Image 1: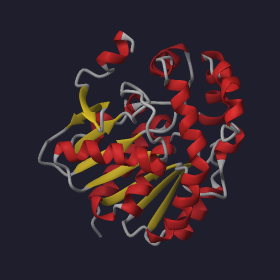
Image 2: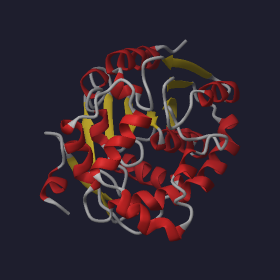
Image 3: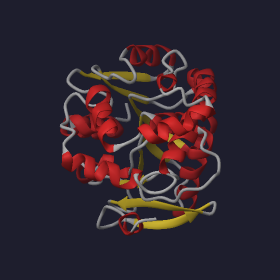
Length: 282
């Protein structure tokens, strides 16, 4: 583990151990305020919420972990299914004494948030799903073909800063510049030993995880806000309409200029929307 990975990226970076794996997280805002957990997507880290921390922590306790295997958290050979990642997040919340929270998750983080909402419903009050990977009709990960173990070594050679930068610019972001500054923060944690293997492990588990999530999505009982970037090249916007149709209490808001990560691409609009929605008890 590199020195940068050991220190974290934020002045208030914190570390604990969850199920034997080191967990990097942020714990910001008033301790007595309602908790909101922000959960990032695949291949990235808690750094991807950097634009959202200041506003969203004004009126709530903001808990922002790195998934195990990503960012500044530890890598192991454990369970990298959506269920395994969700249990890691819940293990952190148990340590922090947080029994119930609001959850906001992007992409893979949306899958984790959905798993918690459907399999541990008492833990989730409200849920914000940001271009979430939860519907088997979309299956974005088949593009990687990582469910075929023999191709793993090929992807390890292909995952380089140049290739990742091109992929992010072409598929994920439509309203955010993927420049050298972005890549320095994105690639640092991903270059830590074991990171590519972790990403492949998550991708291999995703087909089964999506089957499970898709089968339970109608059971979501929590008020749900679905935020979808219309220009997403990974998860097309039709998934937002399907989610709004199938989740009993779901409001869909489209971000016309954004791609896969509206919270990064239009942070001021995103923060204002989420802030108001979480406060609306009507």
